[in-house]
Image (cartoon, rainbow, N blue to C red; front, side, top):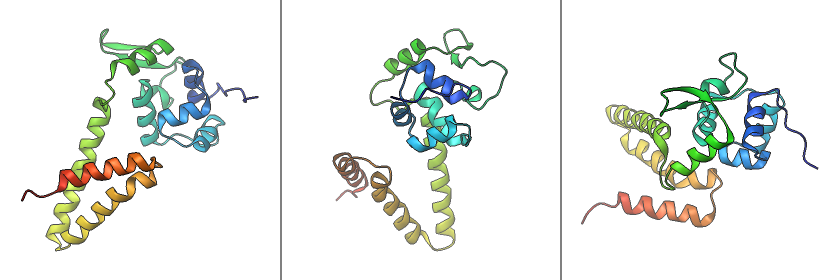
Length: 172
């Protein structure tokens, strides 16, 4: 028999509203099952990165998730109304259905852009220090190891590696 959800934490409140089991929620949010359990039990707090991942995956306002504001009801920004509104299971479902399967969403697109700029700045610094070759090697190695570190299936890992290889091939 599954344990009841601890609704004294915001993550527990959110999971209750979404009607998701702990493993389903942890998979959706991209966090480990153990981390979810510790946060729900009140032993750990959410990091900013984890909060952003959960907010992107569910549509809930990250400020609410972090505990900001007095309202115990989860909120989200409703673009049609132009204001924050109470967050419901229906909002979650509508937000999930509105995103095309290949879409990564505006929040994640911003995060990706920021990360790309950091990598680019680091490569420029490496070039100034005459270590560009080593830096490029490390970036390539990271990309090759990423699917394994993230626990992707062997098939998905191979697809990513093939796509990366085809995008980086120099024209002949």
